Image (tube, rainbow, N blue to C red; front, top):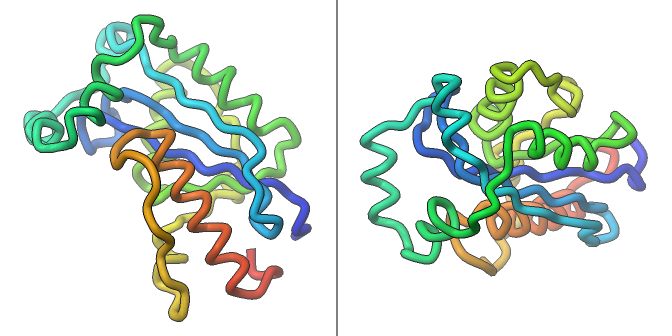
Length: 182
């Protein structure tokens, strides 16, 4: 694959851990990993009522977990911003990151972030904007020996801060291993 291909990191914050979790916010970062360059980023805070009406779920365990987090993260995920986005607006925003159809999409657990978003889009009859064959898991890269994690910047459990940190970590990992691997 070309080293010029841009990659996309997605991170979500939710109110449950299941596939039908209520999505609170979505952070997305587009980057060129071998140039160590972030192209663009965005954060979408989600409108919750429409998701609840479609049967999206919360869990007491996850809500209790949120109460143990940094108050700034709680505010960011649950309360910040009166102009929350619909699922349709989120879909349009995410689709703008996948204009060529050949972008590699990353998450710190594709079986969490990406599968929950795929389920959300399915509930609202939207096609997933990324190709299933181009999904990559950051957890796998973390197992590569000889690459230390970068210093954390930003707020833990803020979807955009998490996505930016994870994108920087992927850039470091990919620069460490063979560029043709991904």
